[in-house]
Length: 592
Image (tube, rainbow, N blue to C red):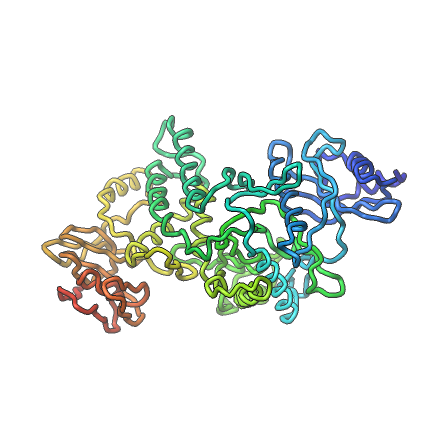
């Protein structure tokens, strides 16, 4: 070992404190039958690993991936699955367009001479584009020219399309490889879900919900108060809130099973991003290797339709964009389609330093169009690579967002459900209002802008109002608005009372029952089976349902036939259009 090796090791970045780098070099020399290591240098790091380059006296080099997690947090089964996945991509023959480094040796224990789990694999010469910077402070894809961006996005779409090829397995889970080299699907090995393998998406999702019930029974049976501890996003989260949310999710689950063309099983790379792709030095569009396969899974196609991180955009970047509800998703981007008034853009901080906000805002808008280009290239690639002519699959990235949102809610678990509370209830309410037929794709706006509110007569509003006063005005995430003023109408002998609120709602009375809801100063009513439907104010034009008794429209003024009765959704200055063959006339009445 060279005399300066101690100095080289001392200069390494991101060293796990439990790793022995002299031991790592010794393992490489012995397991790879190399004479001596002449140099070691830092290459990069990911969420779970740090990667170093080892060069030997014969001038050959390998990449050594060392686990960043300590023994308590490290999952050896997950690391073995990552190794099996890399071998599957290389050796199965299904992915000739996806180059993957060959793994030569590994150890997933902390008792080896290196003191940490490691993988020795091919060293791939090239460049990683997420390290590129420009004069505006932008990095990665955002720092490249428009032409370069289109070329890189096309390469990313080609990788995604290659991974969309059906796999020879019939279960959801993570890949394993037996000692005789055969591949199989085992339990999921991800940071959020462990279990399986699962025979269907329905079984997978029901298992996630069941796990939440088991947690509640095991952890909350001995609570000394009505408040559940440990909820990061809601300090007054109660068992009743949990119960309410999981009932909604359980009811929604069957509706989010997608049509058959989106259920075929494929291999999913969970972190397809520029930081995990090595490009050729001379040709920046040529992919030399795709790395970091940790957490890869066999999943239904629709759950793999996540845009690469370099194309994602969040609702708080470059500045907060609040909506109703304030939706912030990891798997579905926020669609920035304008920079707004540049003078109103607040200061942007990049790596802790103030930066000019306009280039960042423009980059986020540009990402919107790059996502559309990615989807277009994906549709072309599944045809050219696989000969897939299914037009539905060509629309995968347009159809997937609401399925990804639902999956994210389930996998995040109860701790995050207060964040999703409004989205859960709003989605339930809209599906209930519109109806949903089997195999119909569920699509919707990028984010909800208004509320239709579930059609319930919630008699707990008084108790929550009292609880709010006794706790200094703080109520739980599911608390209702207190009644401040009412407007009324009648239908079938029932009285409809509204609440004065800043948020519009859609309410309904069926069979003459009284429904407590929310309105803004006035209501419009309709009849349906003896009840009234209370609407909203909006400036959008009316749209008439055209599908017999099943036609319901979500946007504009809802007016359609349901069982021969008129359903009126939103009221405004623009004219309403009534459903045909209605049995009752509907009058709009104003109150204060």
